[in-house]
Image (cartoon, rainbow, N blue to C red; front, top):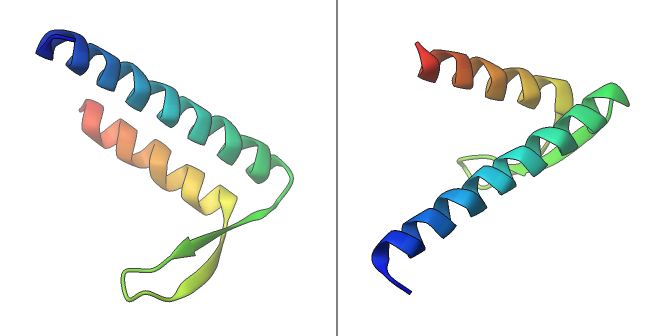
Length: 65
């Protein structure tokens, strides 16, 4: 597999994972569910899915500007 093919595959995988994550977050947010995440300090925290979804959408909007 050439480097170009590897990069294309990598881009497709990243896109697919981001899409799957967004769909999962949307479903959880619609059901008012939470996510379990690790904090930067190593703690395990429960976070509303709606908060995570809003952060991702905000980050995408800022990246596009």
